[in-house]
Image (tube, rainbow, N blue to C red; front, side, top):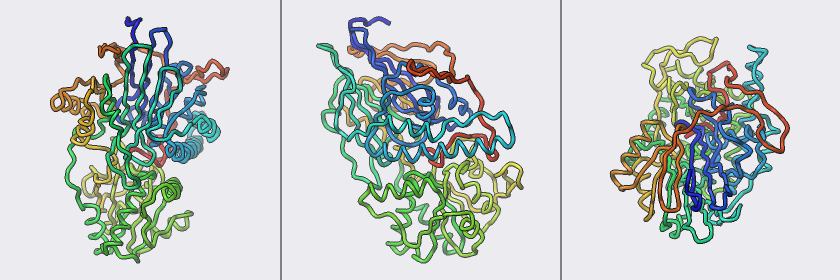
Length: 512
């Protein structure tokens, strides 16, 4: 590839659109030494790409370390699988991401096992779970918590700094810098999923020295790169008030991690402002969500738990919550309604015109949440395979005001902080959103952009030169590639059939 006497980077991505985030940055030193850093290792949740969860399109043995931007499943959910397949190197993340990652990965392992047991009733030859609690425990032992704005050097010539990010508690942007003798230094900033504000913490600003770095390459998400932000709406509050005035029960489908806490904080503030009566029951039904709430109560100085809240502990309480005629607010996961206990409430409430269903997260194609939002009134929908189809008679709304991602104008504002951007690589978005946002960056900021996909990789030199290469087709398998491990796994490329929907290996902590 040339540049034998120069320091240079190569960067490649292994995720196709929004979920399954995984990138590898390789630092090539003039003395032929390499440092290969994986940034995020998530599960794929788009149904058309879900087979990717059981394949490894890179050499595990070559990875020197892993850095995590945050603990959503689509950024960390595949870690136990690569550990199961042989990776045993260090994993770095912020201190709070280390805490939340434990909850998320353990919950995913539990659901892996549950789905496996369901599938085994149908197919005796079903594949084993993606990973188990034992693999999660091994993974957690590899994780090192790092404080914000505290540079550390895992290898000679490499410095890594975690920067605060409002996406959720513990979320980070990651600055990776490389230097070799008298050569120009290289700086790569992975934004992670971006949000400038947080309901639960005061954001530590990006240091000025980072904003003025030369030869800076930024990898930026584009989940909402095709949408501009708008003024805060009161749609959520108005819908809750309208439903309570009609004595209707409201079901809210929520992401278990942070989104649940944000919704409870909104209800808490409505109570404080006399917009919601304290005697209206608020019922929370998500084991992972409840565990996250307990952790958040420890980590944030802000009050957010409303009055008259009940946590579902068993099936009897759940059945009572459904059958009680009293108006109430029920919150459960998953946010896309495919997993967790959400399908139970959708099944019981969708056909009742006195019920309101609020969906508060990103809804991937082919998910139950997406289906019921797009369905016409009265259309019959299959919630559970083998059970009666339910007509859509309830009021169904998707609420977009809870997004933990920056919109296009906010993403541009983020980039405007930096004075010497060489290139912006766009990732983590639909193909359309990435293309549209890339054009926007070039037109408004006059900065060169490239889209990180699975078909190409890029080389950036210390002189600021950019080279683009087509990837060669690579065989993917789950063979253990670690030189210290003698175990071998058979190659697989299919998923376990499940009783509800096809998308299998998803925790209650679904994305966005």
